[in-house]
Structure formats: C-alpha cells, structure tokens
Length: 171
Image 1 (tube, rainbow, N blue to C red):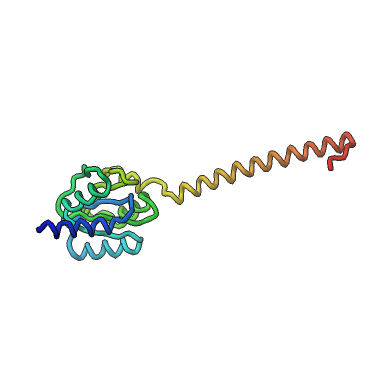
Image 2: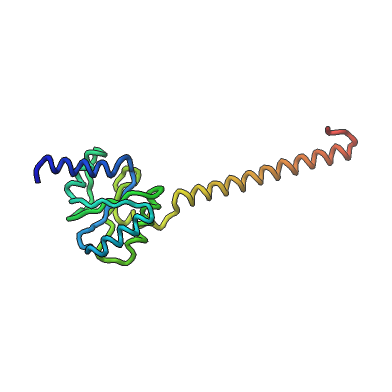
C-alpha cells in the first residue's frame, strides 16, 4: 500500500479512538461474515463500537497516540472495541458477546491508556464495575452517617435526661 493510504488508514484508527483510554483488542482473523454481523449487532446494542484493521496499522496508531509500543501478539485482522462506562463494562460486553465462540478471542487491551493482556481483560470482566463500586461506597457512607447520627442523638438524649433529673433547663 502507498504511504499516503497507510497514513489515511492510521488517521481513521486515531479518529475512531478519539480520547478513549479504555479499549479491547480482538483476534478477528477466523471470524466468518455471518458471525461478524451478529457480533457487531450485539456489541452495538451494548454501546460498543468495533473497528477492524491490519495489526501493523493498529500498532502504529497506538504508538502515535500513546508514545509507547504495543507489546501484544496481534496477527492478521485486529478488531478494536471501544465503549461502555469503563474498562470493566467494556470487558463484560465483549465477554458476553463472544460467549463460547472459538473463532474470535481477546488478545489484550488498554486500561486507562496502559497495556493489559488477555488474562487481565478476562479478570476485569469478572470484577465489579464503576457503578457497582460507587454504590458500595454510597452504602458505606450511609451506614457510617446513620451511626454518627444515632450516636449524637443518644448523647443528646442522655444530656437531656441528666438535665431533667437535676432539674436544670437545657433549652
């Protein structure tokens, strides 16, 4: 391919990536056309976009964007998946969409701009997402807050009872 065409294709990859720091790479080389359409439809319904390019173009685009070399085993056609609220949501969508298919596999990705391997992507898909963690934090804060309120209330009631016993007005 000509240099100008390669640069244009790298530019499309960079445009697709935008400012996202979370993405997953898929080995797409053994996927047939019908499975391709079904996978894209499933991912689109989950808010995940997919771009397929040659691995060399993907490597160059990532190197341009992040100033670091991608050290993943990319061969043939590589699909870049972006979307979801965070890397965990993205990994969950990918894992769910792939299911038991052996014609497509996760090769790795980027989490907050840092390279991760396929095992880390799978581990992330099984962990709590951003929304789950925020919900847990809110529950903990609410639990601590109610304990503080109960403690202050009981202390105030004890002071009022003592004032009443002594015959002093606490108002």
